[in-house]
Image (cartoon, rainbow, N blue to C red; front, side, top):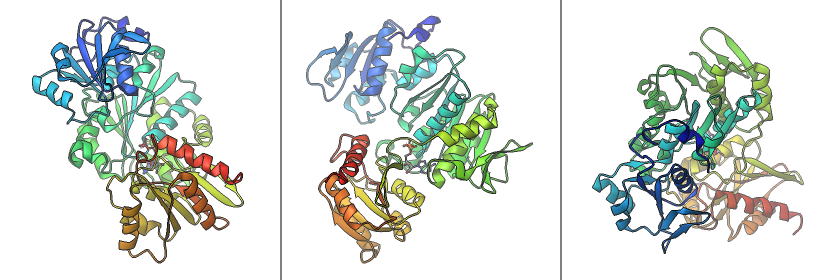
Length: 466
Ligand code: ADP
C-alpha cells in the first residue's frame, strides 16, 4: 500500500502520540480496520505485529510477510513501544488492559488518519443515521464535481482512502463512538445526527458514550463547522463544547437559522435568506428520519455553495443504502422491505413508523436487552402479525404479552429466514408490507446483518419459485 501522503512530508509522529518509523507497534484486532492500520504502518516502515484472539499460532499475514499475526499473548507487550487498538476491542481486553497498566501509548487508526489526511475531513457521527447521512453528503459533493472519498465505520477503512486523497479532495468519514473515543483532533465539519443510548455494554454508561462522541467537536477551531440536530438534547449540548460555527438542522427547527422543513419544503436558512431546496416529497428515501438525514447533509454541505439544482437532483437520485428500509420486491400487491440493519427495538420502531401500510413484522435474533414495549405500543396499530426468530423470540413474545397486545398482535415462530418469509406470506393481505426489521443483532443465526438481509432477499425472491 503506497501511503504516499503519510511519507511525503517529514512527519515527526504518525499519530501525534509518537509512532515513528522506528517504533514497534502492536495492533490489537485483525478485523478490517486493524488490518488496514497494520498495512499502513508497515508501509511507513514501522515494525508491526497484529494480535487477535482468533489466531492460534504465530505466522506472517497473508500477502504481507512484514507483518506478524499472533495469538493474544501478553509477552507481545515486551517487544512493543505502542499499541493500536481496533474499534471492536473492549477496554476489558487482557492485552489492552495490560498495555494501559504498563503505560504504553495507545492509539487508533482514526488518529493515524486524522494526522496524515492531506485534505479537510467531514466527520459524521450519531446513534442512528450515520451511514445514510455520510453517503448523502458524499453523493452531493460528487454531483458538484468535488473529489470526494467516503470511508470509516461505513465499511471502508479510512486509512485506505489516503493514497487517493490530495489537498483538493474532501474526505467524508463515518465515525463510531469507538473510533472517536481516543481522538485528539476534530474534523473540519462535524455532523452529529442524534444521540440515544447505544453500546452501553462497551462504554459502561450513557455519559461515557456521550463523552466519546463529544470528541467529534471538542478540538474544532473557529474556522470549522459543527452541524448539530437542534431537536436532540445531547447533540444540541455539543454547541457549548466546540469553538466552531454551529449550523443547526431539524424538521421543526424553524425559529433559528437552520436546515428545516417549512410548508412541505426542505429549506436552508442562513440567518439572512431562506433558500428553498426541494419539496420533502422529492426525497426518495422513506420516512421522517431520512428527511432529517437529508437536512443534516444539506447543512453539512452549505459552505461549499453548491448550486440548488445540483443539490436537488443529487438528493432526488439518492435511493438509500442496502439493508436500510430497502425495497426488495412488490408481488401480488404485497411489498417486501429489508431493514436488516435495525439491530435495536428503537430502530425497528423508527422503521415501522416510516411505513404507511399495515405491516407483518419479522423480528428477533440476538437480544441487546433493550426495551420492546415502547416500540410495540406505537407499532400496534400498524403491525398485525409478528414472525419471531432466533434467541430473542421468547423475550419479544413476553413483551407483547406484558404490554397487553397479545390478542391483537398475532405471533408466529420461524426457525429460518425461509420459514419466516413463508409464514409472513401466509399472513399478509393485499396492500400490506412484510418488513424485516429485527430489533436484534444477527449473530445467533448469521455472520452479520448483511448476510441476514441477503437471506431475506433471497427468501423473498424464492417465494414465486416455491
Ligand atoms: P447508522 O450508520 O448510524 O447505523 P444508518 O444510516 O445505517 O445508521 O441507518 C440505520 C437505521 O437507523 C435505519 O434503517 C433507521 O431504522 C435508523 N435511522 C436512520 N437515520 C435515523 C435518524 N436520523 N433518526 C432515527 N433513526 C434513524
